[in-house]
Image (cartoon, rainbow, N blue to C red; front, side, top):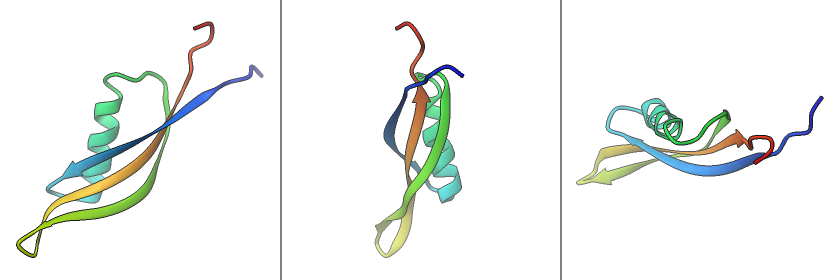
Length: 71
């Protein structure tokens, strides 16, 4: 088995609908510029409030991707 190196970054996705959608937004956006995404771990869930009501659901994720060999 070849040795591998992974980088972990933190992302925050937002949605007016749900935490699940907020997490999906973050992964979808990251996949447009990062290759070989491997794991997305939900680190924290919170909400942004306005006038006592939920304005946004926020999901903080740790996402890992594999470094390409020979780069």
